[in-house]
Amino acid sequence: MTTTEAPPAQPRRPYRQTPIRRALAFVRNTWRGLISMRTALILLFLLALAALPGALLPQRSLNPPKTEEYIAAYGWWGELLDRLQFFDVYSSVWFSAIYLLLMVSLVGCLAPRSRDYVRSMRAKPVLTPRNLSRMPHHQRAEVAAEPAEVLAATSTRLRGWRVAEREEPDGARSISAERGYLRETGNLVFHFAMLGLIVAFALGKMVSYEGQVIVQADGQPFCNSGILNYDSFNPGLQVDGTQLNPFCLRVNSFTAEYTEANQPEHYEADLEYQSGKDLQTGTWRPYTLEVNEPLRTAGDRVYLLGHGFSPTFTVTFPDGSVRTQTIQWRPMNQTTLLSEGATKFDPPGVTDPVQRREQQLAITGLFAPTSLLHGNVLSSAGPQLDDPAVAVDVMKGDLGLDSGKAQSIFEIDQGMVDQGRLERVARENLELGERITLDDGTTVSFDGVQRWVSLQVSHDPTQLWVLGFAVAMLLGLAGSLLVKRRRLWVRVTPAVGADGQRLTVVDIGGLARTDQAGYGEEFNRIAAGLLRETRKH
Image (cartoon, rainbow, N blue to C red; front, side, top):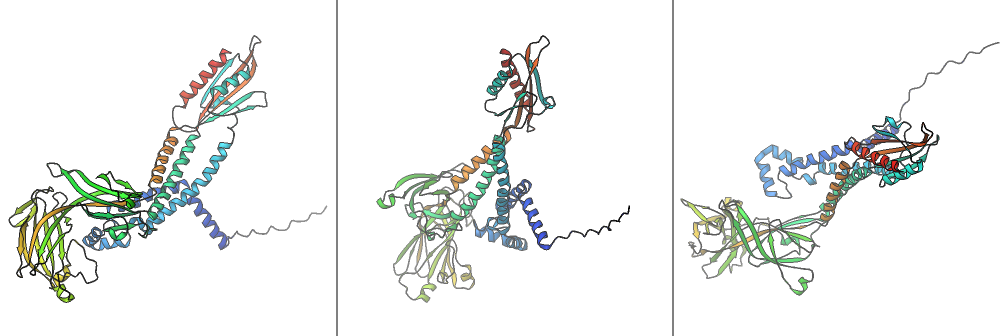
């Protein structure tokens, strides 16, 4: 017999992935890592960490002057933080990236978990293990009741459990029971509510707006008809300010109460408002506005933020013309409400623009609600309006109002002073009713004080959704922490006793699916009750 030699084995070529396969593998592995629960938790931690600068650093959207002051005070460090968008945290690229990745991760993580949850809820409880004595919890007893009676008592006892009855090959019958699926339900509710909360916050940033406005507490009205009526306005991404919810209000009076240490104790603004049909009928409805108790009307909320004072100045020009203005001044010290500001006047009867710019007046300086003099320097002893006084500089010349540049109502253009186009013509401390006479015969008198209140109008149609998702998160978290997953099996096997009496061997086994303690007591209680009931038969 001849044999033929097998051909030599060809060496196996090394497997090489094509660039396309490597790219697909990279995308697949990246996606699997992104939708894992660990990644979702890491992104959630990063989101909380990324929000810290928004709480610790001034934000340009809330307080632009303070932000610019912070940047100037810290030099290159402030400029670096500004380039890295630390003063616009919630609209920054890196915060938005974390936010978006967290949403994608939660959706990718919840989709397969929801599918597995539905599949497990539709499935029957697992088969009864062959040897129940190996279970962490086990009891065995012989009873005189028939197997059918034991199974019926077991089904009654396990009402509320998911139960499946089976017949085994050796003739024994068993019941498999499971309970505690609300634990996984709560887990899913928590994560879906978190996803809903993130989406609601994102939608709120798109359709919400906030506006701040100073309103004189002397009955002057304010209407929510456009952004030009606000001192500052922060719109959402989809808000252009042309379709604000219409309502009007007017502040008739303001009352402030303080402690002996000049700490604010109670703020209260007596106002009237109208919205909806009231705008057509002219009906005004009274409301008492307090801190943290906003007025809710027309889908908006009106908050009381603070208050201050508006000194009244009257200027009598040489030709006898009289001009009176009451303009709000800005508090410098929140404890004593020592305030600063600028009240500006145009000369009457001057039509030539050059002459008009040369004769403009501005009254700048300090206002003290309770005056206190240190030599000739004015200060304030407290925020109560007990002894008002002003320390003013009267400036004459070009105020720069026609330059086309925006100018704060609380101060004059210092550039005009530096150029010599605006000069100080008088400086004086004035009590209520006193006046200054300038060289050209113009008189400036301090005639009174009005209060003003600072209001914030907030519009956020997603706030109820945010509240609902937050409550759902708490309920889901409570369910996932408090509910225990546990299983229980009962096997009944016919047997014959030593005296020939027919008996039923009852094996009861239990297993807790979580590490939470307490199932041993529940198992013993169920097993003892079941065996006690079967022995009665």
